[in-house]
Image (cartoon, rainbow, N blue to C red; front, side, top):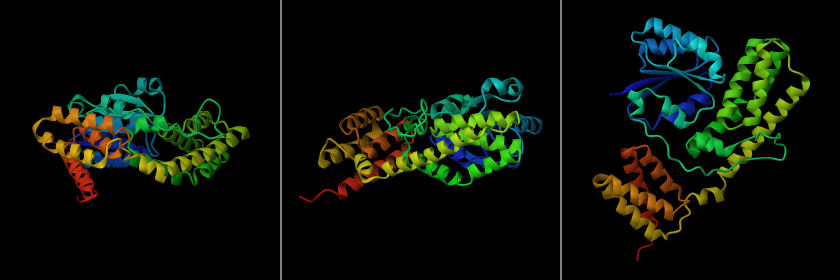
Length: 342
């Protein structure tokens, strides 16, 4: 049976992150909406089995969506709000309409733990290593890092391709954000200013941009009470956004550097030993999963920096055996082609 999950957020980066969290769960069909109206149309076309929605959208709130779905769908699916606000702030109003509410930033494991039982029983929680690199600069505000890369890696399950993609998306999306936010405050367009600051607060928290998220939180609070920010706060915000983008650029360069790429395939075994042990895994995948796990984990211990083996470990932890078999065949074939004939 396939379950339909509707993801609602006006920020494409947040949708990308949520989708990546749910990819390991089998039998899911993901649908996306960036506005409340689009979410209601999607739910009318195909009744979702679960709705994950942001609380603040351009055209309506997550509460509005939940109320509408309760009135139009019978039975109403579970609805989980994902919010940059405090859970305590929204729960009194939302508890009659929501299954749960999660505060941003959320991790892979937090989301999976919140899923309804009929989905959670199919989900394998991540068992990723905690090692990560933290980016910092001399201009970093005291107490809060510009880019907490260790937290980012942990939250995104050490998926380096996803991390690079969402950081690059964030870089592109911020080209006009500072100007738009400044104009919204100068025009006393409090709603627009609040939405922009709120979005930046949540996305910044998701991406480990802690200093930027903290400044955006201050701006959101001022927009809520319709008070213009002082020039010093805007200047600090602008400087932090600029420094955060520079930190992202440095971090992405480090991720793509030849040394970083080479480290993904570093191994303490010679190539022939590694290939032999990879080949020995294939029959175990069909015959003895317990022994397969033991041998794969032993191989990871002997090759602690081998990126391809880490991918195999990740697929096994997700219990995605079909992709695991494909990846094992690919890795073994590639390793075999690199062997020098005797």
